[in-house]
Each structure stands twice: as C-alpha cells, then as structure tokens.
Image 1: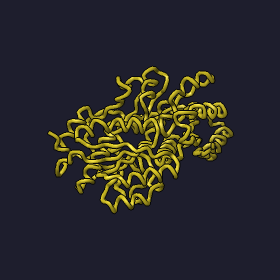
Image 2 (image 1 turned 45 degrees about the horizontal axis):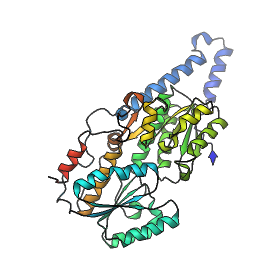
Image 3 (image 1 turned 120 degrees about the horizontal axis):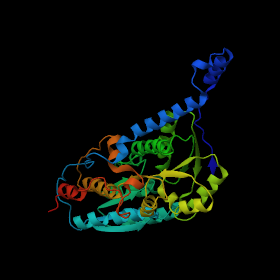
Image 4 (image 1 turned 90 degrees about the horizontal axis):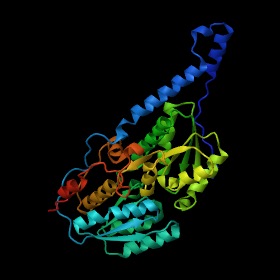
Length: 380
C-alpha cells in the first residue's frame, strides 16, 4: 500500500516579496532565485553534517549499564530467545552464543512465527518451560499479553530489544525504545539530506509490523522538515512477509512509478538486500540509507553497490539486552543513560569508507566490550 505524506511548506510570502521587488525594478539588490536555492541547500547539508557528528562512531564509548552484578549468574540458567524469523533475528541469535557460553547459560531458541495464532501457540509453549528468563526482540507484547501475566506470576522476567511498548504491558523498559528509535530516525533523515547533497524528494519504506518502524519514520520526518521545510517525504508500506523475498521488487516498482524521487530511507536494511542489482536492471540510479544492516548489506556497501547504512552494533545490542535480563533475574536495580547517549553508543553511519572488514561481525562500537561485560558479570 502506498500513500503520500507531504512535509512541503508553502512559501507564498517569499513569492509575493520577490514579485514586488521585480515590479519596483529593485532586483539588482536581491540574490537570484537559483542562488537562494543553492544557499538553502548548502545550509541544509551543513546542518545535517553537524547534527550527525555523534553518529560518526568516533570517541570513547561506555557500556550502557557499567556496574557489576550483585552476584554471579547461576550456571545452567535456562533462557529462551524468541525468534521472529527475519534474517536480522537470526544474526541476533548468533550474537547470543558467545555470552551464553561465557556464562554457562542453557540458551534455547523458540520460533514464534509472524501471525497471531503462531505467536500464541509458541508463547504457550514458552510458559510451560522451566525458565529463568526470556529475551524478546521486536515481538509486540500485544500478541502475548496473557502469557506475560503467566510469566510474571511464575517470576520469570523478560528483557526486550526494539520493542516500543514494554512498560505498558508491565515489562521492563527496553534501552532502545521509542525515544531511541526516534533519535536514530532523525539520524536517517539528516543522512538522507547530507548524502544526497541536498535532495528535496524522498521516500520512506515503512514496515508496519515492526513496532519500531513508525518511530524511525517520526524521527526522519521531523528532522527533514526541520532542515529542509520545502522537502517532500513520501511513505510506502512494505509488509514484513516480503522481507527476504520480494521487498526489493516492491522498491523498484515504487521508484519506477515515482521518478521524481531522489533518495530513499528504509526502516530496515533487509529491504536493500539484492536491491542494487535490481535497480541496475531497471535502469534506476537512486541511492538510499536504512537501519539494521545484515552481513549482505555490509558486503554491498564495501563493494560500492549500496550507499550507506545506519549500523547497529548487534553484538553490543544483544550483550546489553542479556545484561539487562541478568539484572532482572537477580532483582538488581539499574538505570539507562539518556536517549542521545544510548543511540550514539550503538549506532553509526557506515559507508564504503568505514565499512567493517568482517561483514558477519559488522560494526564494533566498543572493541573490548567482551572483557568489560565479563568483568561486570563476575566471570573469572
């Protein structure tokens, strides 16, 4: 489904003023219109670059919760990972293996599916397991509210990542909740202006089933509107079921139908997997940026086929979510830093110049993060 969402400001006052200048033969004292446009574009690009400074990946970073556990984790603690079945979800499962081994966890993967019936069935199975904790990435609690109540009654905590409404359902606040997503959405909007050299026609590919996607959109819209009031941002919905299959085809079709589009933004980078080749076949020369890259995205960027991505250090993310779960399991208090710090700690604008050497490992925000977590987890 496609619908337009314009953020173009009306400049009637400026037009009237320009006409008056012409009628009074005072045009020699006014800057030409194209010069005004160039100045506005230059200002927007410069402002975008300044805003993006925290997302450069430079500077020293710290763990979001940087204090030791009150007690070591019990060896063999049983933790379940809820797998929503996307390529990035598989990467995150892989990123949990090292810390699970370090702690001696009994880590189990439960595939929850993508429809309400499958989720309900899978979560009923989870409740029946003898667990110490649950990790949920992206699955909206609205689909398993009754099971949350059962888990709570059993004293089984859940830590979440990329879930926007945890608190409303009695779950601990995720470190990358709504304000974190909006902040990174602003970075996507600023990057679109900066990397396009000041384009004015954009499109955002939204994934409605991902609860975080609308927050990224809100951030992108607000930042583009702030930096470029005359710019236009269309919004196109891509169903989650098309990720890993026909999402790239949908993007190509949309860009063919809207040739005025100069640059695109996507809520998730899975949309771009295989997209450069299909754009070439269609004779389209349009670049874009997204968030949540998988290894194929890094390979495309390193090859110069994909413009950029808003990298997320998925290892640091999963170790952080697990760290939160361990504190919940131990009943230990903790506090997240402000949203700007959280966002800039885990994410960075990545292009061909700073593409990671290993696309599987991806962006590494804190090189010695494993040693830092091990110390905080009281691991010898």
